[in-house]
Amino acid sequence: MSKNELTPTGQREKFSSRLGFLLISAGCAIGLGNVYRFPIITGAYGGALFVLVYLSFLLLLGIPVMCAELAVGRASQRSIATSFEKLEKPGQKWHWMKFLGIGGNYLLMMCYTVIAGWMLLYFCKYLCNPEVADGVRFMSISGAEALGAHFGATVSSTGTVIASTLVTIVLCFLVCSLGLQKGVERVTKYMMLALFALIIGLAIYSCTLSGAGEGLKFYLIPSAESLKNVNVGTVITAAMGQAFFTLSVGIGSIAIFGSYIGKDRSLLGEAVTITALDTFVALASGFIIFPACFTFAGGVNADASTVGASFLFTTLSAIFNAMGPITGRIIGTLFFLFMIFAAYSTVIAVFENIISFWLDMTKLKRWQICLINIGLISVLALPAVFSLGLWDQVTVLGMGFLDLEDFIVSNLLLPLGSVLYVVFCTTRYGWGWDGFFGEINAGNGLKLPKWIRIYMTFVLPLIILALMVVSLVGKFA
Image 1 (cartoon, rainbow, N blue to C red):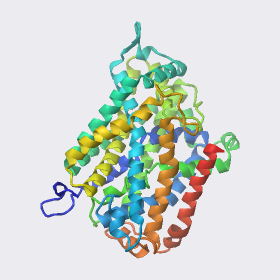
Image 2: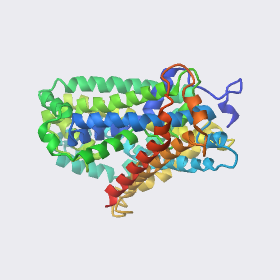
Image 3: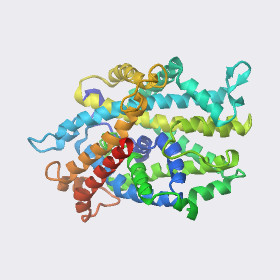
Image 4: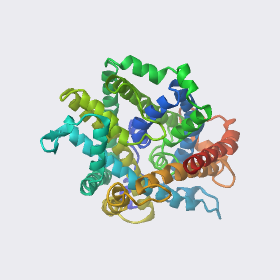
């Protein structure tokens, strides 16, 4: 680790407050999928039934894996670059995990920064209401179909998307360059508090709309008709996937924040709190989207198997534009500001993990690492940028580069990395149960019970691997 990252006493820099740790860790987990994907698949897969199954798997899968990541980070006081090397037994090869972890972080940012850039573009569209054609302004466009065409033209404008992606990368690395406490913690803490304020305010407004009652009924109350139209097996698989992938565990993005905290609080309690914040944003987003859809769009027509980020820029934009030139502009601007906070909080968290990796592996200073990676990630993001423009006809395994990168991270690296974290923490072939159990329960708060050892050692890895296989079969079969 570079000496400039150490405190005057020679210790690793820590968060200045528990609130900072919780909000930043939650910011890493909270992302765009919480806002647009969760409400839609909830409605498509039985409403309240899906929510119940989702919450169950969040407890069964997400929290135990998060505990494993946090424990490795706090016990080693290192990033994924050297955390396994410090905890593994002589002769073991767990340190090879660093290549999967850092590869996953870079691959995630190659596509995620591009989508975050789209949020910035649409925030500017609602803030400024620019002219998009001769005498036609953006908010004059009505209907999801017309807005879909406009969205296609926007994301295929290579120069514009490169600019928004570059602004995203530079701004987020600028925050990270200021250091853990002065940059990452300070900025992300206020960003997350603003995110919570925005989502609560928008949810309250949506619940006052004329169609709010029908929208909330659709969202929260499983009807006999909706249950007939869904397959229980599909509901379970979808809930498992959403619960597992929403927390961004498996590639060391959460572990790095464990390395920045002390032992005064037990890690199970911290994992539960982080998961609760992540779940709150996902659930609250439904209180924004469903009342608005039933008021201005006659309901929700998106199919869960096809809904993607474009839903934000077509269906929701059509709703905002239908609200009128003043109300729609205000709500649209605030909504995409909220989306920027959700996206940027994840980008900053992952960038901090990348920076910590370099700090542990090189003698470079933080600002030097930031400059290098601004150039590196800007270049690596180009295939995702081109996939909807210059290279829109180029596919690999039937997917463009943007979708391919997202698929590899979500369906391969995250579950595989999570299995490796759990096996490392619970078996004698890695760190071992005794070391993990002592670390997870150190400090005040919730304690991990001894009886959970059998579940985490033998059952949890099999569930995750089964989920990975099912997702792969579902994609290609």
